[in-house]
Image 1 (cartoon, helix red, strand yellow):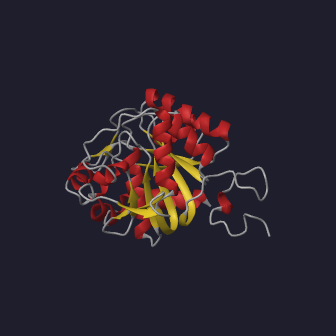
Image 2: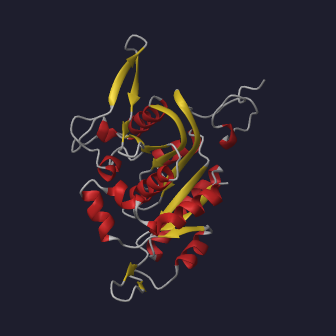
Image 3: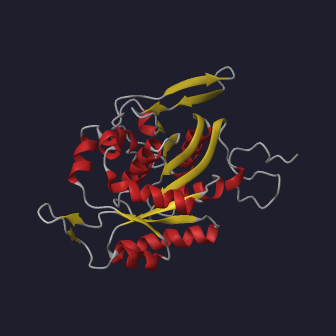
Length: 282
């Protein structure tokens, strides 16, 4: 019997040595699919896409967790309206180790974030790269995830330490890329695409966020930033298009009031994103 036989993520394993695991695995629980949501650029809506995917997957009956990988700029607790809660830290083995108990949203999505582990959400972390990477790895491996179908990792922007660590050391099954319809942004996002290709991690597809606004009178889509279609931008990146998301003031208001889950759950606009994600992941 191989060491891989009882591994919950063996279908996603990219280890070159059969039977020898080269990846960091969660200590508590089993996770079927680990997916990162990435972009080379900040402010494109990675956290929003992560949250929408998590809610839609949970609405479809899947068990879902979210790891807030943006250590210096965490935002997932705010997205889900759980920013006033704190994760429990349980001593293990005579307090030599600890286990994190994630905070569950109203829909049962399990979330761990540095903002759920600090005393105040405004408290900054002023750390260098190795410290950030170490904390990220601990939040992933030492959280009691239970049994999950999907763990979504909300990534910081860029191609630095955190992105490299997650691509090389986490058993990722794939990456969702987030972009916006501007040539400058697409050029920067392309860097992440090339990085993933060099490391050998599959990219599921790209989501174009802030793609358009919809006229309240006639329902017509109005392109704000570029006349190019989402399909053209996806072709430039060499990726399949998972979906295009409009600028949505209702979504912003729901997040600010802590009602994002109920708003997204009742909105059919993101159903194509979910369907394409599940189809392409297979």
